[in-house]
Image (cartoon, rainbow, N blue to C red; front, side):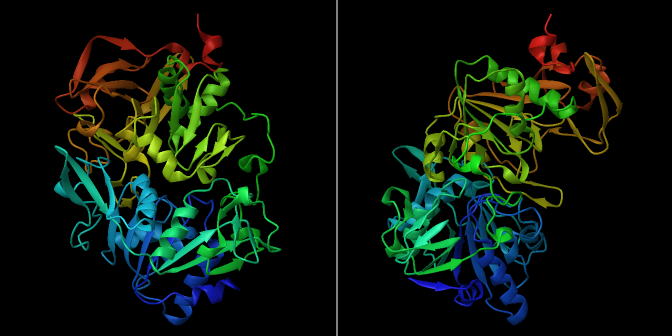
Length: 515
């Protein structure tokens, strides 16, 4: 093991390498190294033509994280689960300057283990019927991507998808402490992600394994229980003492509550009464009726459902996040993926093993649009390449799925008053469409008996017999003008059509507003 500077590590990358990097949002990403790769490319024009492989959306939605690779010529191909955090790469995809593939986040997390084990790839039903299925595009995100890498295979009387393994030429990781032999711990990280599997995959591919850490410890001084990556897998270590390049998230330098070093009270302020809160409250009602469920909260509006549960003094559930978090208070926005006061921090791939096998009782996920069958698009709309992240794994495996989002997009002005809504100016486009632009999750591929619900601020829908059915509308609106006339033909309407509870629209917690 050699200790290098970040520029020295960046100098080891060669043209055409396949590079994998750790990270989830702004956590556990070797920012000093990827920034140095960008600086080298801007100064020297090298390396060129890299293939990138990463599971989660790793970036600050601007330039950091995997966004450092977002330069024409630096990258030739990207295979990623989440693209939202790296708009530079998305722009290259939209401009047809790179091959762009989107695979489920959980699949890529599990793929590192397959690469390490010399297996052909990950065989799974996750993605069947979606745009990642070779019958529907094979995960290609632009016209410059010549062919799908994903294969359909038939095993034991069923169809599966094979996401192929590939050798890794360079693996960039981040830990906390490395000893003089290269053993790496992660005591200051919010989650372990897939560092061990990635290091094993790089080693068994004959590639380089480079780890960014905060400090070097004396040989033999680390607790073996704390070592996440043993030293025989590590080629080089980069020591980074700059908190801007080694913060626990892109929003915070450190947060001991995320690592379990400190437990903090849940003193989050109550959310203001907004359209988003109405949506979160109605979604929460789906949770409150279940006996101690295991749940997942997605990014954006779904992440706030934890706050609603706290406001309502509801604690009878186990929260999980796909990053490997079990329990705790979920972080939001740039801290999404972390949690204060976690009960356990497990590998990301292991979390997805549990998800894929049907372990989630209920999941709350965002949506960009939904259609007559209940198919949902979160991955590609307008001029945005967002990717699926863990959405497809979760949507195609949870026992219940609640999709949340506004009913319309573009220019809406909606007031929440005590007891209902007042739609002063409606949005230009309804998010309930005849057919989604891209199928991120196909309801036909969901487990038998899965319950699917769509919650908006003014209407609730359920999928019944393969058809989207309107079941509730908000008080205070004109159901015909504000809902029914905006829906595409073919939506069923429940008889009787219920009214959303007035307590959703109250300033006080729902339990206090109930009659």
